[in-house]
Structure formats: C-alpha cells, structure tokens
Amino acid sequence: MLLQELLGIEEDIYFVEESYLAQRNIESTLQYLNGVRNFSQGRRMRLLRVREGEHTLGLLIFNPADEEVPVDFWSVFTGALAVVPLKKEFEAIADLLMSSNLPEKDLEISSESWRNAVNEYYSLMLVNRNLCPGCAVRPESYRSVFSENRVLRVAKIFDLLQKKGFYPEGRLLEVCSGNGMSTLALYRLGLDPLAVEINKCVVCQGLEQGVLNPQRVLVMDATAISRYFEPESFDTVMGFMLGLVYEFNKELWTGIMREAVSVACEGALLLFTVSSKPEIEILAGALRRAGVKGEIVDNTDSEGTYDQWLFIGRKQKI
Ligand SMILES: C[S@@+](CC[C@H](N)C(=O)[O-])C[C@H]1O[C@@H](n2cnc3c(N)ncnc32)[C@H](O)[C@@H]1O
Image (cartoon, rainbow, N blue to C red; front, side, top):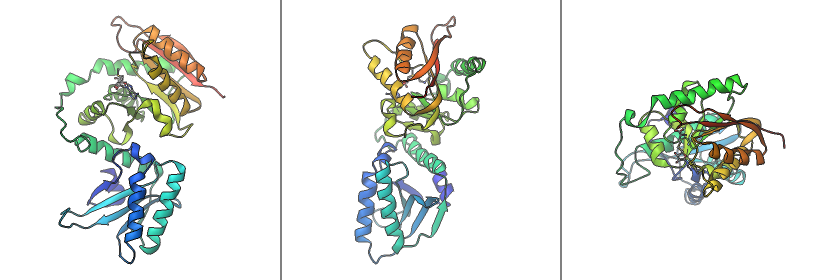
C-alpha cells in the first residue's frame, strides 16, 4: 500500500474516518484527537508526522497489540482534505500533541502523493469489501464486463479532438466514470485522470478487474464535486456516455455540468459524450449557460450506441 511505502512502516493502518468524503469534515478525527489530547497527559505516545513544508498533512498514532486488538497498528489522522478552518484546527491539535511527544519520523510528502495514498486506502477498503459487510456481489469475468471496441471508440475521440486543436492536459477530472471502461482509454493515452463515480459497486468492479487506478478513483456524487474540490482545481473535465438524459431527469445532468464547470479553471477543456442528439443539446445548453464556449460534434457511427454526440469547449473568463 502506498501509505505504508511512503511512511516506511509494515504494521496495519486505519483511518478513523469511514470514507474519503468524511475526510472533508473530519468529525471523528477531531473528536478522537481531542480525546487523545485530554487523556494522554504524561503518557508517551509513538507518533509519525507527515508534512508538506510547515503544514502537517497527517499524524499517525501507534496502537500496540492488546487483548481487544491482537496486532500492532497505526491510526492515521489527516486534515489535508478538509475544508480550510478544519484543516487549521487539525494542524493546531497535531502541533499540541507533537509538543509533548516528539514524532519518531517527520516525513516530507507532497500533498498530491498524500491525497493519492488516502484515495488508495479507501479504494482497497472498498474492493476488499471492508466498507460493505455482507456484500453478495460475485466478481464477473473481465470479458463479460469490458469491451475492447468501446475502449477504442473512446480513444478515437482524442484523434478527433487533436484535429480540432483540443487536447486534455494538466489536472484531469473524469466524472461518471462507471467501472472505468472510458478511464481505461484515457490511461492508454498516457493520461492520469482522477475518476469520480457515484455507484460504489461499479467502482469496486473496475478495481477488482485491475482497470481503475486505486489511487485515482473516488466514490463521489458528481452533483456535489464543488463540496470536495476548490474552484479552479482542474484543467480538463470529461465525462463519457452520460445519461440517459431526458427532459424529466435533466436537472441531475445539468447539475453535473454546472459542477464540472465550477471546479474547472479558466480556459479549461470540457468534453462530454452521450448517445443521442437531444441529450447533447441539453448538456450543451447547461454548459453554455455556465460560461463554456464550445461546439456539438456529430460522432455518429453505424452502431449508433456509444459516444455518438460530443460537446467540446473551453471555460471562458467570467
Ligand atoms: C452509462 S455510464 C458511463 C460510464 C463510463 N463513463 C463509460 O463511458 O463507460 C454512466 C455512469 O454515470 C454514473 N452516474 C450517474 N449519476 C451520477 C452522479 N450523480 N455522480 C457520479 N456518477 C454518476 C452512473 O452510475 C454510471 O456509472
């Protein structure tokens, strides 16, 4: 696991927050650390610190094996993904704990590597069924789930993009990534998107098949991405085969478009594909209203199913 590699430890590790999303509000983290601060006075604790410059990204507290838990493990606390006031609160408590217990390691790690390591932890928890006790979903074969033709079809969109002078670069976000069929095409093109998908079972499937990169996928509702990412966090936002988009459910999809634009930086590339023309017209309308200038592209083929219509555009200066 990347976390153990980065920290140079072999013992098990556990985050007190139950999900990546909970890392935004770090309720359990603050409660637990305040408890440790109040009850640990005079007692020695083994600590590890992870920092970027002067900022503490993470604090690990060692838990020796006892009758209740018969193995040594480290509890991991982080404020790095939290909203700014909570991030500061985390750092203040961490400083207090470290003032009476010098960490045995003080490791400089980039916030990006730390974020990837945290993502990976929750991905592994998911795919190992630790987040879904009683899961009865049986693994399916790779060939029954993934279609090479579809992966190639997504890859071809990028030839078309290149001809039009658009190409994804910088920090990439893929929304509604499903089990990673479209993400796989991006990986093959050498791109490294952060993939976001609401359905944890399809994410689990993509992880189980070794398709999705566990460090770069999140179970997250794309209608709420601005709650978890700051504005201007991405240089490209993409989504493939969104929908089905109808008049009666269009609010969901136009909401995703607004959110996509809100986390994209000025000049960012926005690319979305759907199956039908009426669907792309609904998405294009929402994107244009949100300040994106772009075009609808006819990408129809004889099969008439996947990625038939595209919207390609750039976020304009507001
Ligand atoms: C047709 S699939 C496309 C999956 C993948 N992009 C592909 O091209 O193979 C659409 C995906 O959008 C996801 N989705 C729907 N609403 C969502 C939301 N609010 N947030 C994130 N993903 C969502 C669905 O769960 C589904 O996996």
